[in-house]
Image 1 (spheres, rainbow, N blue to C red):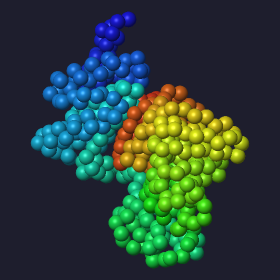
Image 2 (image 1 turned 180 degrees about the vertical axis):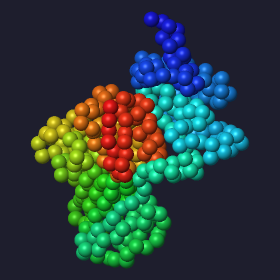
Image 3 (image 1 turned 90 degrees about the horizontal axis):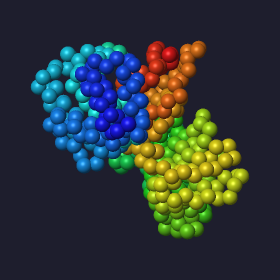
Image 4 (image 1 turned 135 degrees about the horizontal axis):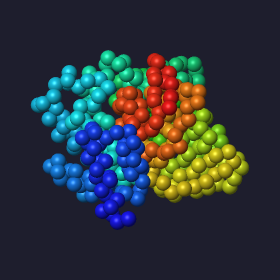
Length: 397
């Protein structure tokens, strides 16, 4: 089959999607094209033509990192909305047609398969969703517990914590506690929470939702050891005596040893594997069962049971969460729901007889979207339906 023969049904279905005349069967067919790498070049041609017809500037490189395209599209559309469409005319449960155009650019952008994207400006989004009492995404929330028994709920208006010899403060210098005592500090983020921590040596850690970091308020001895449960992104500073004082991240099942580097560790207790992704520098993975394994930048180790494997990955896919993105790279529906549970503090339950689709989804969306937007996107891409009662969500076929 030639390229032109392949392109014809994609063009036809894409136009029907834009015109909002596509039916369920046609949408399923279009989704099949979107999720196939075979049609990447055709999607490029189609979207270039779409932008030209829309009098929009197309960037030189069309690839997965298409957020800039969408942002540019949104600037233009929001200007049109300001002139043409009062907010009150946007009905709950239905996206205005101008929004549909912008969504389509990202939904159907298929460098590796895009699953869905909606982006509201914050004011419009709140107006649209207020009546439905939508579940909002996570925020900067964490609790600090010191070994002397003090417990401090950290400010949501702040995004980072600093503990050093001068005491405990926020990133902007606001003092929390003056103390010179060396203690063990534990920073815990709840579900729907995240926080940044600056360690006594100047290293930084970004904690994802439902995670715990334990470390001393001053490093001493022959190592800088911290313990992690959940997920954290580390930017480790070279210490003044780094050769004799290596940085170690312990997760219980493995240890990551570094001297100065950037990496992500995902070690949730409700997941079967511990995942370490190296962005730059060098780390050494040590387990109780095997010999030490050194990672190079762009590599990822997965420890599942006693088996330790290594693969080459796009590190941005595994670190973008700290930049405010949910990135999916051929992830199962079950994995996606698990991510949403942590970030939105909800619980998904499958109705008896409901089977999750075996398909995988790829793409990226902002982590500041209301939950209903993402659930609507999943409904569009699967045969699932979601019924929410407070923070419990029933999954149905």
